Image 1 (cartoon, rainbow, N blue to C red):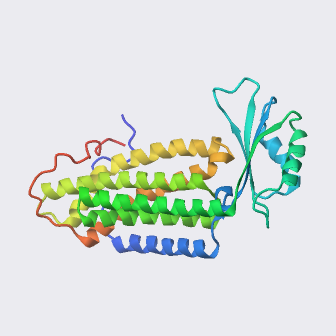
Image 2 (cartoon, rainbow, N blue to C red):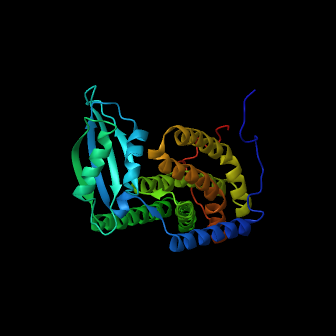
Image 3 (cartoon, rainbow, N blue to C red):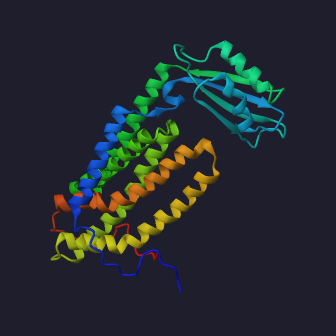
Length: 322
């Protein structure tokens, strides 16, 4: 007896209320955009500017003690990360401390650096500052611009890829799903005021890839079934295709979520924002590949004069039991 996450041979109608799902998603996207423009994002040091300090000590690093020592200085956003490297000596303990730029200053001043050093010496008397680097407002502004360009280029590349592999209707459906995922993710970070830094940009690009993978699997099966059932209505073909790939989709999402939830619980504060973005992205990415990309494709319609069978469709794993 095998455990199944999805019943065998499902025949669910995913398009009984297509405009309902599109309406809900549209409303959520509007709310996300309003939150972004009204509340804004809680930018981290990468985008606000600040100073990075690399420290070394012979004593074992306890991040919580370092953080408690810096609390009285009221420096604002402070991130402390222990650095691991196989080339380090046994008694070489290294940390990266990132401090946001203070109001009215290009970076953390020399006086503040000395105060930080004095505070940390109460925890690790032999601590030394190996390097001190600052990121000014100009550089942080360039990082924001570069991050936006990276996301837009990724979505544009997806549009071209799907257009060449399928048809333009498929491409618009896939891009609609990707924009939906990115906008909702940014909206959640704005509403919850979770720190938004370069790691979150990496998560957004990963979400784009994950969502695209799910969408392509569904679209491959749609294309195959359009050739196989030439007289079946498009709605029925798409329902059949989604049901046939549903087992694979659910299994992929659940196994990914298991790993991400473990990281979220056990990984610590340093990667928690990144992992949260990935968890949210897997959920909305799975949803959008079924209810957004497919609904847009159904609305636009596709041509049915397929002249040749497609032997390269990437759906050989679509019927894996979940």
